Image (cartoon, rainbow, N blue to C red; front, side, top):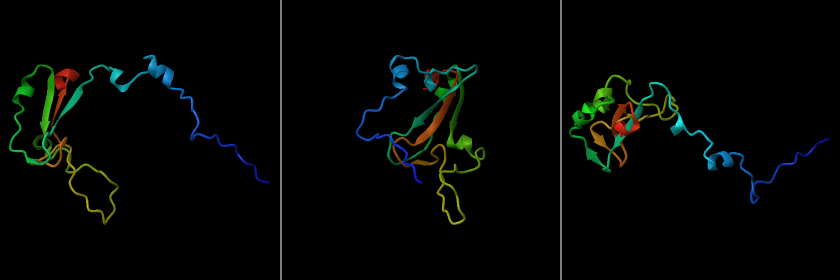
Length: 126
């Protein structure tokens, strides 16, 4: 004997969303609302060019700001992260191009991250 389970119809019908009231009234907690002790903030400087060589990055002004804890470029990460970041599961035949966290030598698209700043405050990091 087979019993059929009633499946609610979702396509084409109104579905009452349970999360809406707290989101709309401001009672929800967003990640941006969380403040922890000794929490730091990171901001990325991204390329505005679609394809360009990186000749140099001057980090002196950012490092001089009070509240800045670190300013990093790809050269600072050499030997620290151990090469490329994983992007797909590797199999023996997989050919993985290097995927660095920060562009090194050249940027390949608009928005390619080229430097990062870690600071005590999000506005200082920015």
